[in-house]
Image (cartoon, rainbow, N blue to C red; front, side):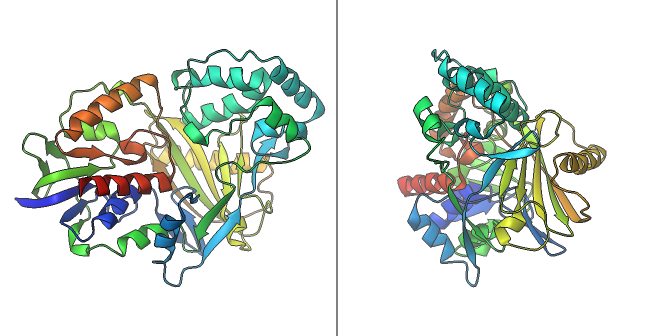
Length: 417
């Protein structure tokens, strides 16, 4: 039986950020996969560089950015001014939709403007009601509802009003009208940084400060005895003072034997296709949103417009319910549907597919509900009293940025030392 002060469950950005903060102390990091990074991993194939999905960093803390970049020896980090668009009736308008309704065809614009003016801004009890109340029927039904239903793969009326937190692009009537003449579409991610070697470079930056002997790959924690403070893997038992988990919260509850209702913790899956073509396509855009229900994907991103490369390189995202079964056959059918819908949307024409890769993110986006928030707070306190701390997007069952995960991990490390 082994002993450690800090047992870290998961080698994604949250777990690595915690380990980096306590790197001079006694820790062990257990990672179920054969490599570190979680969803923040990169695939290089036939000259294309892709992530598991689009992972672009929007730093609000210069010290964190400096800390990571300083460890990327020889790596060029690009700083990009975001160009994000929405596909609408064979053309594109700027994102966010609600601030750019003046770019719509005349009748669509008038519908949005009239409904915005006469909206009934009553107190909302769920995310869907909030969309109608804040922005009116037409804006909600043209873009916000269909897009987010495709993304979350759920009924939006089940989500909490503040399900997206600071990441939802709120705008009042004055903001929208002002944008007709004075465009301001910045949002939280007006600029982002991206290393030429992909998002994995941020993982390697954190990993570079760690002791490789303290990292246990291909070793999933399968049981935690809260009373004895013992974690079990297929290879060993580990006694800990503190356990820090970034695993999906209901999974942590299950291995810790904490009684809970798993139905409170709903989420979707996302199937990501990374596609490389023989020549360029749409210029300048970094990603495009697709609210149309007849198109299978909700977002398409353009790595080639970030790297300024001469072949179109895409990530394409499709949302599924959590119980969806995605076998190799279903994935291949989805890939063929994606290629057809890319043609329908005019993204590809006579392009030839050179290389491709797919990955299923499971879970992907968590469904933040009143029930999940109440239960989360209670269960986290129960775990905390036993020395188990749950952090990160999935550990805190929330919607946040990768930088937020780093901030949270650092704060926890500082509080425990």
